[in-house]
Amino acid sequence: MGQRSAGTILAGSIALLALMVPPRSLSGQAPSQAITPTATINLFDGQSLANFDTWLVDQHEADTLGVFSVVDDIDGAPAIRISGQQWGGLLTKEAYRDYRLIVEYRWGGATWGERKMRARDSGVLLHAQGRPGNTEEDFNGPWLRSIEFQIIEGGVGDIILVAGYGDDGERILPSLKVTSRTDRDGENVYDPRGVPKVFSSGRINWWGRSEDWEDRLGMRGSQDVESPGLEWTRLDAVVDGRNLTFSVNGKRVNAGSESSVTDGKIMFQAEGAEIFFRRIDLEPLP
Image (cartoon, rainbow, N blue to C red):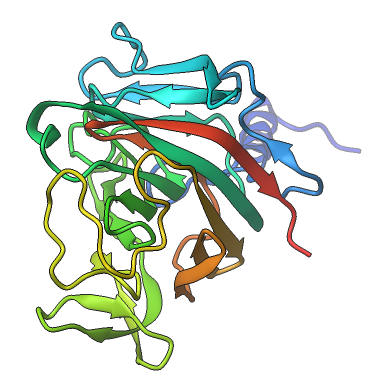
């Protein structure tokens, strides 16, 4: 076998290394290694925030005011407390795909700042991708680009498409097809008998959201399926490939298909209102 020059060997080594380096996504990040549950994953273990990272506007990973904590006894059981005093979220350390997310939450009594007299507000961000804070171009926003399962008084079950920025500064818009109609005020509302439409921004209301909804503390519509007051509410989000289905207390309230994203982390929002989570489980799909 003939001898090879040092330059040839170096070139071959570089080529081999290039094959070994994972490809980059359009956002400048390596593709996520999303976990598909094969057994129940208890994201809240009843004792700690071990499965989560924290993120807050300005403070980022620091949490000097204790926005995120575990309390020993809320209605007889431990729970995660998100005070809502600052905006941000509790973000899973891992990314997930193809699962049923089961969440049990209830509101606390505290509200803060500009939302002190507004409807209590939070949310669960599904398929959260990219760097934390990417909802603002300087990466100091409260959240990540994602598809939101809205938690707000009078609007639990709305879908919100949350845009964000890639590392290259490009704005990235998640998209989802929802069968919907427009209501009296021209807002989009989930309706299984409606017209399929692809959305890449904005909110798609759950089917029973009051047309007279007001952003006020204690807001409750006549058809709301969220539990009243400080009672516990169960959310189910079924994520199956490009399809999403949202249920509140066992009633299907919203759904979409042909999602542009199929995996990502999960974030629980801090958005001006105290909220408790006593159950956060991922179950495998049948």
